[in-house]
Amino acid sequence: MSPARAFLVYAYLQALDLLTTLAFLMANVQEANPLVRQTIAWTGHPLAGLIVVKLAALGLGIVCWRTGRLRLLARANVFFAVVVAWNLLCLLLGLGGVPRP
Image 1: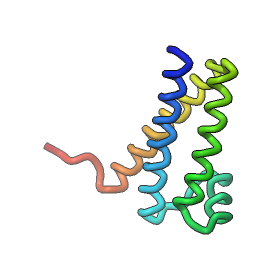
Image 2: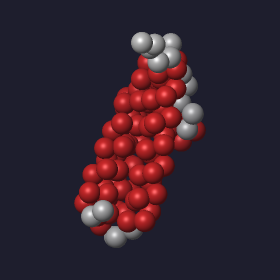
Image 3: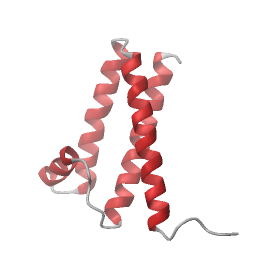
Image 4: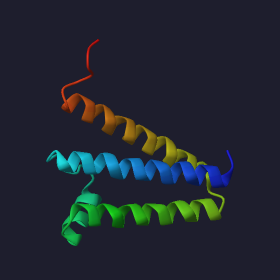
């Protein structure tokens, strides 16, 4: 995978993580990550806190991309793909499960 594509996947996964985290917060589920929880408390608003965290994450992703740390970026992509999949599974189960035919 090209460096630019790896970063685009990373950015996409960050956006999906932000959206699934917002869905959890809207359902009154507490943020599990203590760093994100502290940032939300510091900003005083969940969306502002998440945006600060995701901008920092994108900054780290840009550093990885521009310095050629592609293995690190690839590992981060796998990690966030699992996080997003887990978040979606939990949201589906929390909404009453998967519909039956």
